[in-house]
Image 1 (cartoon, rainbow, N blue to C red):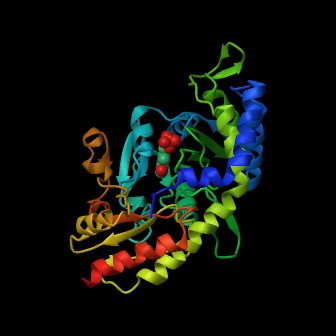
Image 2: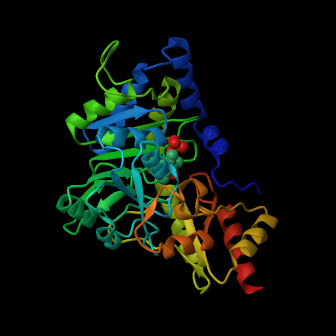
Image 3: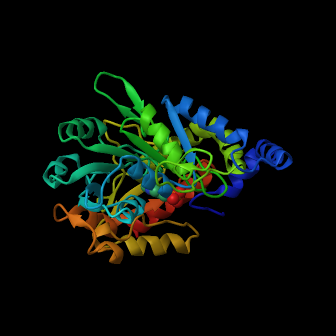
Length: 375
Ligand SMILES: *Cc1c(COP(=O)(O)O)cnc(C)c1O
């Protein structure tokens, strides 16, 4: 058996005729920069998300940085970020001379603990970056209420949960990335919607912000060689847009495949006290970009080695919380003891889950984990 954390080759082979034809078309057209596929992909993604504006860009980290630039924050302004996250959100904040303020995460969803945000707010706080980790959204409704009360901008980093929906008490739903002022995402090859290189996008319901984001991504230009604001150069390649056009049509199926696999893991792996399964929150759908368990009693490294010996890859997302990262020790301010982030970094383990994983492979993974706990 050849089990991968994300099986890009198998997926490519399944979609090969469609993908190859789309790439061939771009090669023949030679419209490598800003070809028609970039625009049509943006339109189709906006339709899928039910939001007025999608602005493609170079990658998911640029997207966060440009979102913060568009909000016109000033050096020294504070931006609330989760302490347990991929680093991009914190990095973008620090790059712009803003101050990352670390807030602890919820022990069940691993996302921002909304109850701890209020105590982190100072007179310099201007924005919150809600990172939607592993396939489910932060608790957006109370976050937006809080943001309104304190006049904060909300940026949603939705690199890992594109397609996940916020579930409101009245039964309405809204796609993640479209709820705050600006949403961002990444099309890095392992993400839920992925291309064959780097790519990203910014998402916004706001016409004015959309215009500013478009300008920032294109050197701050309002017309050719006329630069109104400081911008950067961050584009989605036409070749990548062509791949994304195809994969967007399959996104629902990719997400559903992982949800089915997650249900099988839930069923097959329950009943071990030191092995805590993922919790699905009541306020978001869960797309299981990662199936992340918590391994107690210091057993994580032993379990990981055991599985490795059986040819089963696993990953630790993320082994160090932000407050323990060398680069941010003196840059970030901590709003609390961040004990949940610290504990999770020692206990989390992500199991293989992707659209191409077969039930046979998954049964082997489940059996191997059970064998570890029973031995
Ligand atoms: C992957 C990822 C990013 C960064 O995306 P890039 O396209 O690699 O820059 C940002 N935030 C989160 C949560 C991610 O998972």
